Length: 377
Ligand SMILES: *Cc1c(COP(=O)(O)O)cnc(C)c1O
Image (cartoon, rainbow, N blue to C red; front, side, top):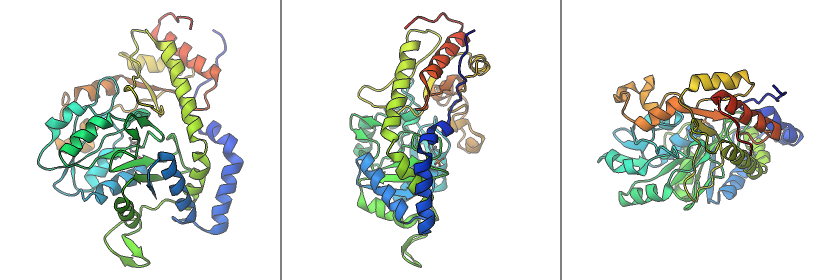
C-alpha cells in the first residue's frame, strides 16, 4: 500500500496558522483598549458581517444558541406557542424553542437535500403555530421560496437556523436576507469560527435588530435602565476582533470547500453503495459538511479510521428521539427520513486546508472501505 497522509476530520491548526500573526495583533488591540464585553470590536464586526450577508443588520451575541433564542423571543414566541422545525439538526435549534416556553413541532426532512420538506408544513400547522424555523443543514439552504410562500400565506414569521451556512445562497437570496431573521453560530468548527463561543442574528428589520440588541444586554436601553427582562448574551470583544480578521478569508475558504466537494462528487459518482449529497437547483451550498450515506456505517467508519481518515456523524440521533424530548411522545417511525439518515450519515473531511494528497487519501480509503474498484478519473 502506498504511503498516504493522515487526514483529520478537521484541522483548526492548519486553518489558523496563516492568520496567526494577524489574529494575535487583533487580540492585542482589544487588550490595549480593554474592550472585552461587547464594544467597538463587536460593532465593527457586526457591520462587516451584515455587509457580507447583504443584510441591513447583524447583532453579535454569545453563541448560535443565544441567536436562536433571541430571534424567537424578539418575535414574541412563548409558552403555549408552537414552532415548526426539523428533527434532523443539532439540538440547539429545538432547545432555543423550548427555552422560550414554546413547543417544537417537527416536519420531516427531504430525502435528497436533508433540509425541511415543505410538503410537511400543512400537516404540522395548528392554531398555535407561531413561527417556522428551517435549518440550512450542512451548508445548504432549505427551499426558502416554498417555505416563505407557506409562511406568508399563514402570517407566520420565518427564522432561519443558518449556523452551518455562512455565505450560502438560494435562488431567493443569501441566508438572512429573505426571512425575518437568520441565526449564525461562530463556534470554532463552523465555516466562520471564533476563538470560543459567539453568534449573530442577521435581519432586514430595524425593530427586530433593536429589540435583540437590548435583550442581549439585560434589556438595557441606557445604563441601568431596563425596559424588559433580558439576559446576558453579549459577544466578547476578543471574538469580534478575531471574527473580523477571519471574515476576510471566508469567501475563499467556502470556495475551497466547494472545490473539495466537487472532487468527491466526481470521484464517487456512480458508486452504488454510496448516496452522495445533492443540491437544490439554484442553491450555492458552502459545504459545512460533506455527508454521504452508507448502509453498513460501523464497518465503513472503522475502515476509514484504520486508514487514517477522520470522519464523523451529524447527527446519530434525531432530536425527536432524544431522551431530552421524550415528553413530546414521538416514537421510532415518527419521522422516517430523519431516522434513516441518522442511521446512514457519515461526514467526510471537507475543511478548506485539505491538500490534494489528503483528498486522494480520502477517496482511496472510501473505495477500499466499500471494497469496490476505483474508476480512474
Ligand atoms: C452549531 C449549531 C448551533 C448552535 O450554535 P452554538 O454557537 O454552538 O450555540 C445551532 N444550530 C445548528 C444547526 C448548529 O450546527
